[in-house]
Each structure stands twice: as C-alpha cells, then as structure tokens.
Amino acid sequence: MQANLRSRPTHLHRAKQSRNNSAQPSQRANRGGLPLFVIGFAAVTTANSLGLIPKPVTTGAVSLSSWLMVIDISALGVKTNLMAMLELGWRHVAVVVVETLFLLAMAFIALKSGFVMETLSHASI
Picture 1: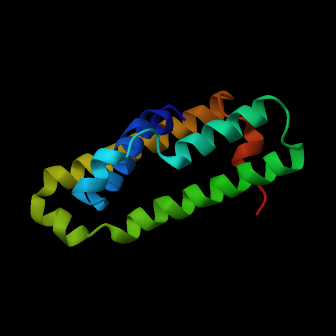
Picture 2: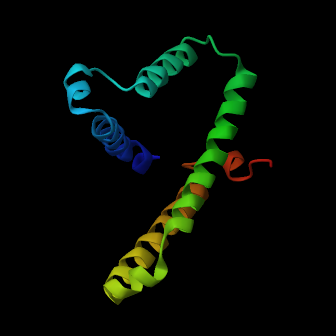
C-alpha cells in the first residue's frame, strides 16, 4: 500500500502534464486548479469518512478497485517489450527480476505476519 501512496504524486504530475500538453498554448495560461478526478477523489473520500456511503456500495467499490488494479498491472505487462529490454542488457533485466522477487517476498511476509488481513488474500471472484 505504501508504494501505491508514493506513486500517486507521480500520477497526478503526469495527469497535469498531459492535460497541459494537450491544451492549446492560449488555453494553457487560462487553465488552473486541480484536475477534476482529484476533486472527485477528495469528495468521495470525505463522503465515505462521514459515513454517507452505504456499506454495500463501499464493499463493491473496494472489490471493483482491486479488479481494476489487476487489469491495470496486466495491461502494463502486455505493453512491456521483452526483446527491447533484452537489448538494454542483462543488468536491466536482472533489476526487474530482483525487484519483482522482492515485492513478492514482501507481499508474502505481509500476509504471513498478519499485516494484511487474510480475508483480503482470499477474495471471492
């Protein structure tokens, strides 16, 4: 979860940069403020914290969010060109492999230590 929280500022920066790049030069100066999805995220978070969102909706949203994350990660894997990575050299491939094994080990430790609830690891399909 910490990695997810750390990556959010990067995603926000990319979204802002993408929005600025897609706008015409005259429109860039007129645009300001936060992206609409950030405002929506804050509104939904506040509503959930105040108990305004029913429990079944929250449960469904959490399940949907988990599946969308799996789809997102799968899409990254589909876009990965292994031949291009191999052309960079074995050290680059080794970094990816070691990083993946490290994350797998950390997830396993989190599950076995009880840091992550066991019920989340056995989510129903």
